[in-house]
Image (cartoon, rainbow, N blue to C red; front, top):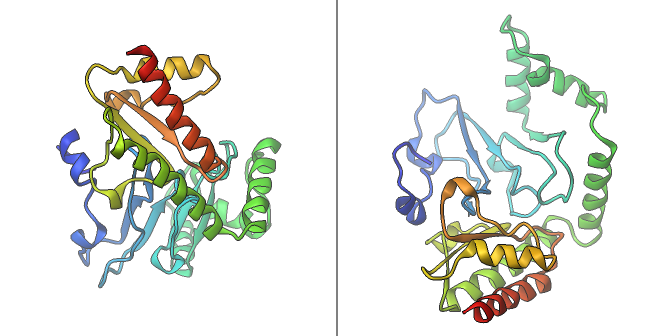
Length: 258
C-alpha cells in the first residue's frame, strides 16, 4: 500500500502495479502475491522494459493462486498457508538472474547475519539441506500437502479449488442483505482468504464468537484493520462445500440473534 492511502482508497485500488513505476535505476521490484490481512491479491507480472529483479512475497498465495514462473525472479514463501504446514522454514524459486545476484552479494564484504544470508541459504539448498533445523512437523505437513496437490493435478487443481471457494464466499456476500466483500474490485479479491464486511447493527465479533463456541474457529477479522468484518480462509485444503456450509451457518447465526 502506498504511504498515505486511506482504507476507503484501499478498497477501490490496492497498490501500484510494478508497471506504473518502471525506472531504469530500479534494480529490484518487491511486492506480495497476496495480502492476507486485507484479502487482496495481485497479478505477478514482469513490467515491460524493466531491468530490475522481480521479487514476490508469496507466503499466503503460493499453492493457491496461479503464477507464471517467467514473470518473477524470486518467488518465496513459508508453507503455513496454502500448504497446510507450519512456520519455521521458507522456500524460494529463483531465476538464474536471482542466483547471480545472490552470488554477487555473497562475494562482497557486506555483513549479513547468517540467519538472513541468502548465499548461505543457496549453498545449503545445493547440498539438499537446511542451515537451521526446522521442525519435522513442518516438513511432514509440507510434503504431505504437496503430494496431495500433485496427485490431484498440481497447481491447476489447487487454484481451481480456491476459485470455487472464492465464488461461493463472494457470491454469498454479494447476494446477502447484510454482508459485502471488503475489496471493491472483483479482480483484486483474494481467492485464498476473503474479508467480508457487515452492515451496522450486525456485530462481526459476535458472529465469530458464536461460531467459535460451536467449533468453527479463526474467522475473526484482522484487528489492525479495524473493520466490522470476518476474514475467511479459502486455502486448497479447505473443501469448498465446507465454505458453503459456513455461509449458511453465518446466516443462521444472524437470523437467530436478530
